[in-house]
Length: 241
Image (tube, rainbow, N blue to C red; front, side):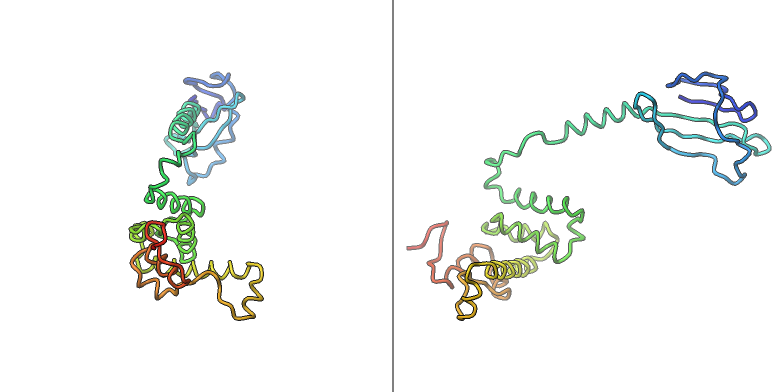
């Protein structure tokens, strides 16, 4: 609906493609145009209007001035947003997932797992990878470690590239997260206080960050850790005879 509201007659001068029952000659119901300062803006909007049937309009009002630069009329342009909202709903429904991801297809896809874990964290926190803090990276590496990503030999360089950090940074942060995680487990385990008082070592070995940085990949870390606990190294998930 477009309307030309003449200031002198305070009525609607014309309507094109109306969306209401108003007609030319009806009162415009606008405020006094003379109250507008000469320096006031002449274009207002877009702002929202609502129809009785629930449809929403985006409206723009432009003040028209005469030869003496006095406000003489208001041109109102209204856009019915219904078709745009319906199109947006269709596109959103078309692009949105409607079923759960078929996990059996992605069980071995560790690269997809990396993307999923990091992307989920970015969406949860609203912080892109470039703005992640040290604590953010520790949290992400913890999730990746729990998802057994670092059991894959080539995962560390891929994780480093995804987080935009060096591989040594990934190794150092991962070692720190594992050390902190080990402390949390020990402090909450039954009898942990008694074991500490008696000087007993924790059943979970903790590899220092410096030692971790010397290892090339996750499996090597697993083998080194198992060796320190007196467990034969594993190859392919089976003890070496």
